[in-house]
Image (cartoon, rainbow, N blue to C red; front, side, top):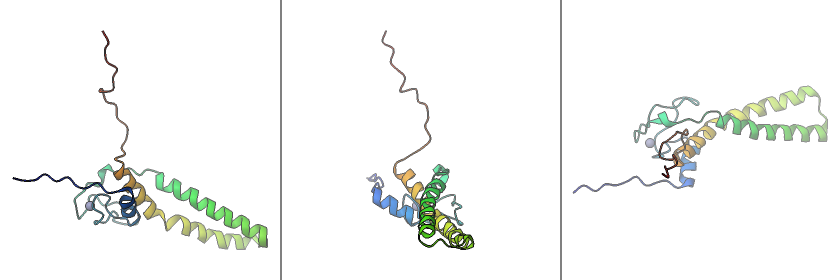
Length: 136
Ligand SMILES: [Zn+2]
């Protein structure tokens, strides 16, 4: 007799850690990316088809908001405290913008993919099961 075993659902923390490590959201072993932010078609370890992934603009929006807050706050603090020349502002904040946007982008995209998988989030679809019943 063959026992049917269902894969154990990962906890939210496990899913988030798999995301931050840029690993497959189902097994946590296979790599998610084939380049900087280019996804592989499937997981090399468990075979999960990555076609369901739809991170959209989510990672970029989070990164923009977080990076913007950090850079603007730092620029305001430096300006108020030291009043440096504008060329120094450009020299300081240009690299900081690049660092705070490009460095966390892979992990943020992977985190949102892992959360999408964990919560089984998908595009909304119409079903006819929700139709009101005929009361006649
Ligand atoms: Zn996998």
